[in-house]
Image (cartoon, rainbow, N blue to C red; front, side):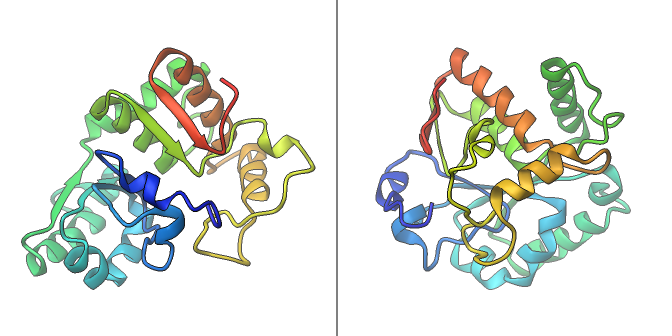
Length: 216
């Protein structure tokens, strides 16, 4: 997204979904400034809580949807759930929701239906992008996706290296990260597999990949 200049276009959307702790301040010209809904992994919650003034006070109109396994999100013993409850106490106006375990299992089942593989038995962790795409399709009649490359993008050796996160320059390379996860036997996201599924969904639903554009 860096240098895209698509921020104003993104801000014109009726609903703007963002993932994890991707910031807007300092990147408005490329990614926009509005955040209607933010989908956050349990692993990113510590980063969210580390900057509560920005996320829960300055961006208080944003709705937060948190996903995670039972051991983190259990309402009685989940560490992540308790930490979010404390944050809610400090910022009572913030809207924080968690995905139910039924919804988590539903997303697992969609993965199995689409790939023929059991998510847990195949050593896969679904990405925040997976949950966000499913949520977007349930909420929106039409979905425009920015900053996501296609399943074949990283197979082309001519593509320029870019950071995995636009706000973390000089750290992980995007394609290196995707390929490393795709080849790992356990405990990895299947980013490329997920993108292949998204490409199939785009043929049946109103999903448009704006930058980079996909041939679907």
